[in-house]
View (cartoon, rainbow, N blue to C red):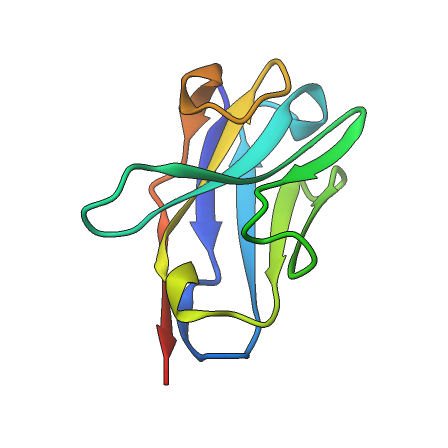
Length: 120
C-alpha cells in the first residue's frame, strides 16, 4: 500500500502562487495515476488534477492556472498553483489510483491534506 504525505500549503494572496508536494512511500508512484482533490468547508471533495501514463487532466476551474507533474526518482507529485483565487481556498488532498479518473471512488490511497488559504 502506498502512503501519501502532502506539504506546501499555506496562506497566499489572491493572484499569488503555491506549489504543493505529495511525497509517496511504500510503493513507487510510477505505477499509479496520481490525483489532487480539494475540499472547502461545507462542500464535497472535488477533483482538481490528475497525471497518468497518458498525460494530465484538469478540472475546468483550474485549467490554465494549475499544472501537475511527477518526479518518479523522488517519488513525489507536485501541484503548481498560479493566479490563485479566493475560491481555490480548501484543504488539498493527494491520492493514488490504478486507473485514470476524476471520481473520488476511484482513488484508494489518500494523504491527510494540506490547507491552502487565499487572502486579500
